[in-house]
Image 1 (spheres, rainbow, N blue to C red):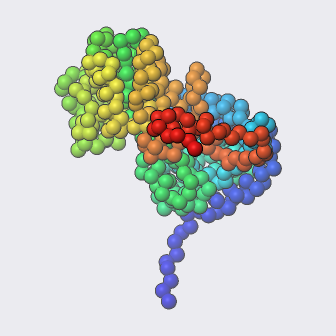
Image 2: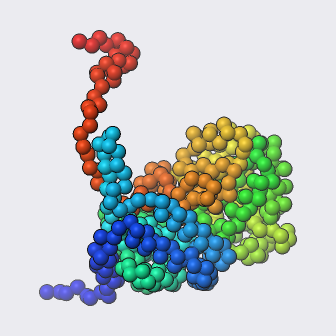
Image 3: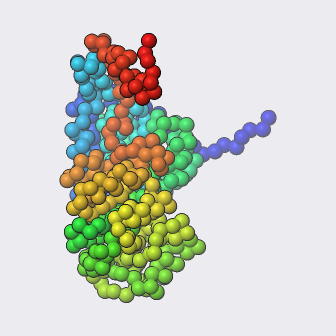
Length: 471
């Protein structure tokens, strides 16, 4: 008999066992204890010392983004998510409607496998851990290999805070390094729910894991500036959003579509806000060097503008913060149509508002369908038309897109670092990932007064339309 060679254990089964044991210890926790655990995990990252050290480690670890903005992200996303979670009930009865005879009880979904990206190796794992624990679940994180050191450090801090309040620390775990594709797939198969943020390859593997899965779509946000916009304010917001963390966010603007009658003025405002408008020669260098052989050069993504400027041999001055490249139009054969993950913004000129919507739709058809669109306008009908016509989950009006898309204190979107993009992008959710996705619900159903209409009430209009005479 031939024996299979022994393989080193990935440790996945041990993580799953510990997670289930932690959940059993936590099963009787009331809402107050659950919220205390969520708050402890939130503080582990929000703590300014931790937020700063993890931001520094993330940049050193991955080479992506910048420390100041990652520090802000670590704190702001954690704070906003904690606000949302502490306002929700997830233990016992969460809704009771006597008139409809329905009472709802929240139950855990089980062990959550959280797949997280290198762009946010601290904020995304902790964000998902908070949501998982709020639902009474445990989470095992499979981070991007390049971000493992940061994620592991964040998990250690979270576990230490859980210990301080007497909560099971194994509610939060991370796979051991090196994190392999095989270990990640083993984790997804063994868990009760997979929540995947990151590359589309990871999302597709999550959906084929055999475990219920929530994935997110690719970003590639086009933003329209129409004739009614406050051009100076729009330029400041676009600049702040585009340059945040060196454009690592999936919600970062990748193209701006400007109506012809305000085009020159809008470009002038973007230049004043920190944009460098590439000359034709510079634009050619940006395209050929950012997309050698048609594929994005990973060595140039999420770098400081000084590196971008040197790599593309750009003019301008030290006040510049990103580069704008004018393009005649989007298309699958034009690489600047897609997501650039860098301080490079594609610019399109639209003949009129209808043409602007067409251009946005063409961009989304190449990449980013389902994700989001922005518009700077004071014409409510224009904003409504964008929402009615374009296949996206989110349309942000007069906002810095990176700051508003995943939740903000001045809009009603739930705070998150994972944006569902609907069936357009092959996703199971068409909203921001939130606590509703981390609980099961039991419905207690009682009888009520019958609510049974007559045949005439339901079919009369159809009968009249087809000339049917009821018997």
